[in-house]
Length: 96
Image (tube, rainbow, N blue to C red; front, side):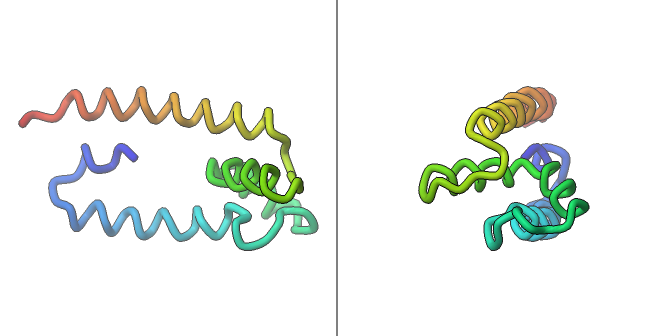
């Protein structure tokens, strides 16, 4: 993530990551399949990039998918490209 380039100390980065990682993990569908959940939770999980990684892995391992390989790959590729561009820009502004 790009947060490290915006913070002054490592403790602030660790605090932000703890508040981000746990909700992202729990809403990714890693602990439960998305099928059968209320539509509101599926919509929130669909905004989470980790959901598509978990879905692709679940499809590759047990053949049970929610979104499909093409959707998973497209979303993960787009998010990766976005984070690379934003992260490169933010880290280029750091003075050593």
